[in-house]
Length: 417
Ligand SMILES: [Zn+2]
Image (cartoon, rainbow, N blue to C red; front, side):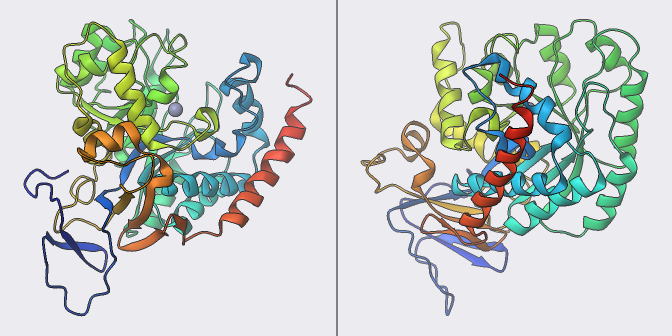
């Protein structure tokens, strides 16, 4: 994913501490222990630029086949019932699945932060699991939620020197009509703290001009879901350096809710800063990043009116280096480059669903599955070896998440069909 380094048919990657020191064939590594990666694609880990990890454990309750049990009815009910312990169980459960899918960095879009204890629980789960990420601190659900900026400042001070964690915010959308002063005040507060902003996109025609004139759109804004924009809205987003995240596995089935097809083609032509995301493991029902890449490929192919040729190599870029760029981490991760942090995955190309691999990019996008992920290294630490998590006890993760899920399902079943 670094064109200056290039791709190798066979090479060594030398890691010292948490840093990539050298890449090339037949490196002399002295006494360093070696990992045999023959039969594997060695590449940077995937970067998931938006995932609501707090609702991973609602996977069995959120039903894609029944609108009455859809994402919003279930999460609106479940949100207030979630204890800090549930949040911890769910985030840890989600990260375990992300790591097994080769995801090494996640923007945890936490929009059910009901107390400081909830925030601490989610961060504890992120740090213990060993993943790299941003904790995007949000309001406690509902349309009028506001972010506790004092608590954001507390977390920034607490974790300022942590090498794997950054703190951002996520905001509720501005009201579709009426004054936007409250929203702008929140944006200003976030910027005063230097906290990058994530929020779900909107296409309300009346909002773009006022928001632009109040200076909202900027490179510190990550806009999620690239659907439903007009020409003029796309221009405003791209001209102001707004980052965009596409979650194709969610966007395709919810295309009617989110106003139409994924505008990858239009945005790519404008040189927009694009990346990929899972969105909600609870709603999409899995954390499979290969599936996310494939969904973008297929949604693009389904359209007859596209002008961009979307090749698998570009999709792998969106899944790695572009994701890192979106989160402001491209100087540290997103490619295998000497000097960058060692966030490395090994994907087996000898498995039955991969053989024969001729073009690795094609095979990753069209054939890859999480079960092909053999090894995952984050910040120089091995978190998955031989396809098994080493940083977490999977049995304990499953038991805790399932116990939280069963309790909530019981409570929610009084109000849901
Ligand atoms: Zn989302």
